[in-house]
Image (cartoon, rainbow, N blue to C red; front, side, top):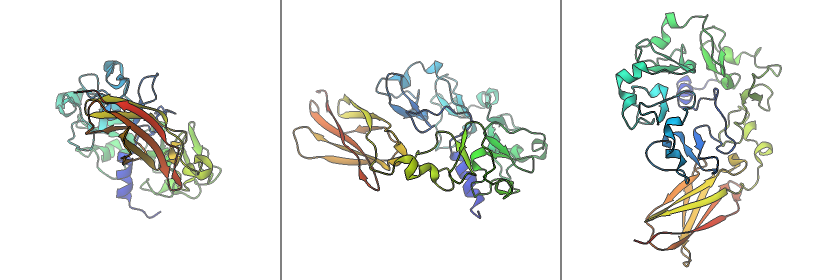
Length: 333
């Protein structure tokens, strides 16, 4: 309970907003969106409508003007790409930015709406998420997120946020009773609150301890949200050899092959993926390890007019799952 508050704030600012998000059973992570309804491919949101094709069916670059951003994101001026509202007019290298540069245009930033889960700083240019308001750490460049006139007890918390006892701060609902202090008055870890009689709000479920609540669908993602780690427990996530990947496909290009697959059932039980490939008529094979969030890989430096055998397997601490293999022929020069 005495962990670093600065570390927790950093985690909160980089974590995916769990508020009012649509959780997709095919794409297990909320920062990932599936391709068309005919395919199970999934790509990161910052790769959607960025001018480069990532979906096997090309749908990530189609109908971009009709693509609706998730809460906490906003469209670039071109009406296609989405980016985080808190990156507006901020030169943050580890967050995606607009190809047209509009996210760094002051006029665009002033006219833009921060959305339901964020509000404008007093400077009228930057946005701050509700969960980062009045928490004792400056987020707005002008410091208005910590200004007394903006931190009053009559403010309301958005859905998915919980109001601290001081009546000013709002924190993420799933951070209440998680054994870490997020409220400056420590009310989120009050023993009188953190009992098994505590009720979860709609769309949230109890961890095994009967106290902490996390959003439905966040179990078996590979990252534990419950303080008792029950959301990643063997009973829930099938503690056995990892499951088989689904719908493995490959698109050959000149000199490389793009490989796609869909999330396996209980993807959280997989520690990662292995790509095994080589010429079909050769015994020589190459292996590359990928993280558990990957569902696409590009194999480079391949010979033209050559048939390749490509396999994908999941693995965890218990071993390697069943191999799935596909063949693809690279085009000639």
